[in-house]
Image 1 (cartoon, helix red, strand yellow):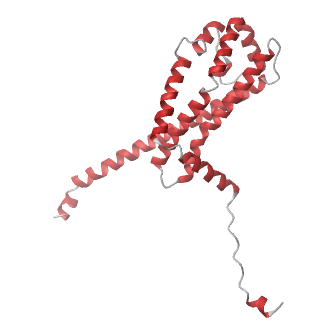
Image 2: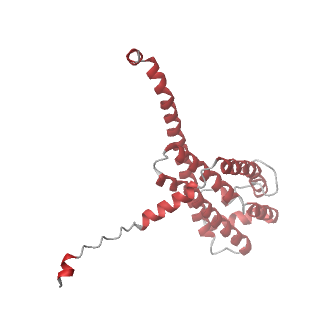
Length: 225
C-alpha cells in the first residue's frame, strides 16, 4: 500500500433504492395522472351509460336479458363458478341463451376498462385530496385496474367455454378463479374508496369547525383587543 492510497478519501457508496419502493413510486406516479376532474367526469359518464345498459336495460347483451333467456345468472355476476357450473350454465341456456351470452361477452370487451378507470380516477382524486403529502398512497388507486385485468381473464375463459361447447373447456375452472379474484379486488377497492371518502368528510367537518370554535372563544376574542 502506498502513501497515496492511505490518504485517498473513501468513495461514498451509491444509495440504492429497494425495488419494492421503486415499484410503489412508479405506480403512484401513474396514479397521480389519473387525479384530474375532467378525466373523472369522462369516466363517470361512461360508467353510468355502461352500467345502465348492462344491468337495467333489456338490450340483447344486457344481463337481465341473459338471465331471462337462460333462467339463471351468468358466471360473470357470480362470486365464483366451477367448471361444472360453467358447462351447466351453457347447457341450460339453450341456443338462444348462448347467443345472448355471446352478445354479453362482446359488450363486455369495454366494460372492465370503463369501470376500472372510473374507480381508479375516483380513488386517485380522493387520496390526493386526503393525504397530499403521502404520495406513495396514490399507488392504491391502481388496484381497480388489477381487477379489470382479472375481469378480462374471466372474459377470455368465457369465450373459450363458448367455443368448446358442447364439450368442457379446460380453462373453465380458471374462469371461477378469475371471477373470485375480480370480485375481491373490486370489493377491496370499493371499501378503500368509501373509507377514504369518510375520512375526507371528517377532515372537512373538523376544518370548518375550527374557525367557529375560535370565534366563539371569549378568551381568544378578548386577547385580540
